[in-house]
Image 1: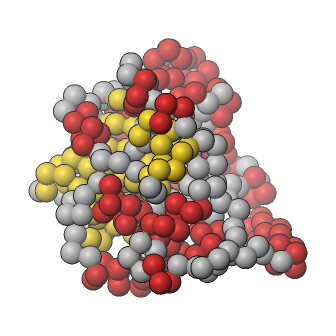
Image 2 (image 1 turned 90 degrees about the vertical axis):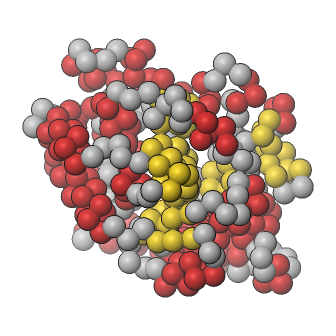
Image 3 (image 1 turned 180 degrees about the vertical axis):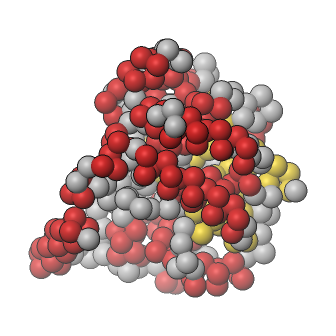
Length: 339
């Protein structure tokens, strides 16, 4: 086993985001810490080429682990109440593979930090690893503040079960785009027991209906039911630890290509470009003025090692392009509904 390492989940579709993340980790976290890429699917030509160019980069290749988590997630989602609803109600991430990030628990790193590919590292994670001395899961997000109807877990149903109160559940609700944990959690026997609770005892209903096929919602059930200690920096008694992290919601200050929380100029662990598509970033890297907050920061890290390829200027998309993309989006939604 390796003492510490970093995981991310990627394929060729998010190649631009992956390169930006890797460069930001090398700049702000470590240039030598091993990084393992978990394959989202088989589209990996560009990813494999990048692995050859970086000594500390590898591809997660434990197919048994991938199959174990795939089978677990498939069984759980098939048992979820939303599985019986019409095709039109299926979320855009239906049948996705984001839950593959959970194979990190079967990986080679004793302690690890996971970054979703749509993040950029902004500072060291030494404090994150330190927290793993006392906790099994470490997060840095504000998911616990979401309204009950949008929370990852169905709090009223959980309370009605008599197992937990809202006061016990809500502080433990978290995101899955950035977290730290340990190798060996959720071994096969424990996962089998959780599967029985979810399916036979209908605890799958503890997972909020809006989160069907959402890895975050499933992960929240696992961390709650495992009853292992959880730490979230946004609930720290030290105000310096409580910062924003979302590019589409939180205000940041750019100082020498490092982002800081606007209020108090507090250092942030990462910026999360959630709610932006991989195609948005691909167009940005090709010189289009895509509608992405903090795009200058992203471009800096994406082309950090090949600045000559960075677009010299950004050009707004034409009205025709906008209309065509909107039409393609509508047609894609119709196709998903009838397929």
